[in-house]
Length: 123
Length: 327
Image 1 (cartoon, rainbow over the protein chains, first blue to last red):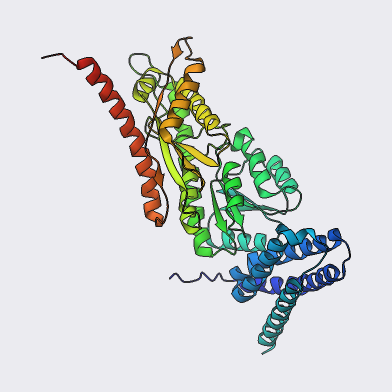
Image 2 (spheres, helix red, strand yellow):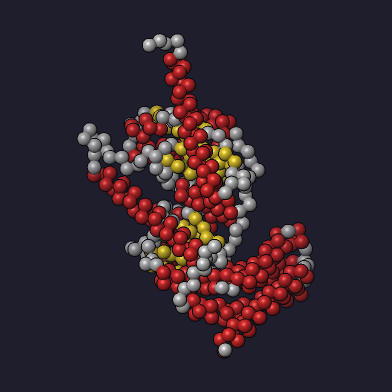
């Protein structure tokens, strides 16, 4: 097993990631809601695709910054949206509840992480 | 090295800048999309980049399309391209290698892994510089009998451009190593060897020899068209091919088809003399359930098997003419 390389000054990038995470989770919640309330196939799938792009970016960096768990939840949600959009149900104007529940779980994890990091900072 | 990194996620670019500035002597230029990357390439035309780090998934023009565009630039035909991807799905990886990628790193990346990959890229860049200097040196140096000094070594792998699915040997090695990490154990490798390649190499100029390899590579690629495969010139007249799972090639049948195509294609050297390259096929080696190092061994086994097939062919030819002769 090799040791994770910790670069000096990585804190600055972590802080930026957390700032962006707040914006990203807001955007993600908006897209999840729009997909859930969408009535046309395009509206639902476009919003799911936007949510997927946000998750993809979070999954791509969270692990490199030490937020492995958040990265894993983001990746799981990304893959679930991919499977839905590429599968037969992706051709029906219906947003699956499992995807919305999954996104909700991600948002909770994200909020918890931001709260935890903010508590660490003020301690 | 001067590196251009392209990713639509500013955090990735920040991480890369931080890492590269903090831990290496390389210079990093960043771009957030393919259009900005192409602009940066134009702006840096006088001091070009040595290598590229490209994200696969980007809006408008993705990293695979950008890799193709970079490869199409004469200046960057051989420059190492390392793909940064969050996806381990094979279709993206295959497309990236076909588009000219040299290697890839899966995101989120570990700094130690990225550092190791960059060292490999640096070695490749150094290798390129050495080969380029050899080619330039060859222009000035001649043998005592007037023949030009040979820059293209017979047993060295060589980059052949503009042939579908033909990638650099280092990229093929990286691709095969990645295969063992994924679930694609059903892939098969096999190789074709040009008969009498030593004679071609001895009697041809660098340009003629490279052109012949390119022609043979193109005919092999055309023969395999319709199948999912990647191939590379491994040196010594040998082309190594890797196919996707699900297809079980018959190398001997393929060799016959390739030789028929070679016979139908009129190939000439610079003096207008007709040349008749023909190939032999080695055995198909399955990559199933192999570990990382034995996958590399499988590649060598396929290579050696094709060379052995050529040696056997030549032995049979000699024996045929020697039948009935006594000392």
